[in-house]
Length: 161
Image (cartoon, rainbow, N blue to C red; front, side):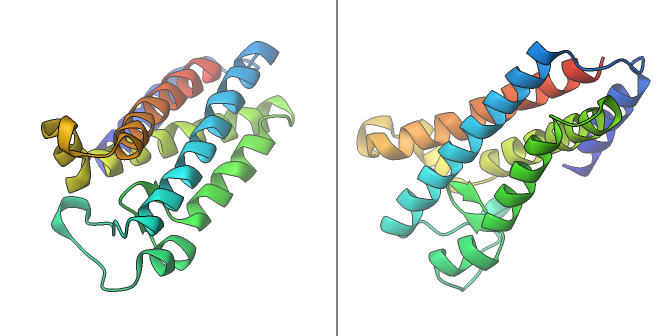
C-alpha cells in the first residue's frame, strides 16, 4: 500500500504544474462524492449484517458500528473519519489551483488505499468466488468499492497533469 501511494505521489509530482480544469475538478469531485455515498451505504450494510473488517486477516474485536464510527472501518467501508477527510479534500478542489492540486493528490492516494483495503478484505474474495450465495447488496458494495476508488485515482492523477 505504501509503495503504491509513494509511486502515485512521484507520478503526480512529475507532472507539469498546471491548473486542473473545471471539468477535471468536477469529474474528480463527482467520483469522490459517489464513493463517499457508496461507502456510507456499505457501512450501513456491514453494520446491519455484522460484517467486521478483517483486512489481510487482521481483525478488531470491537463492534462493527464502533469500528466504523471511531476506528478503521468495516468490511464494506473505511472509517467515518477517513470519509470526512475525503469530503474535506473534495471541497478543497474548489479552491485555488495549488490547493486543488494538493486535494487531487490526497484523493489519488486515498483512492489507492481504499482500493487496496477493499481487495484485502476476505469478503471481497468470498463475494467474487460465490456470487450466487452472497446477497446482491454485498456484491454491489464490493464492486463499487473497487471500481470507484480506481476511477478516483485515475481522474485525480489526470487532474494534476
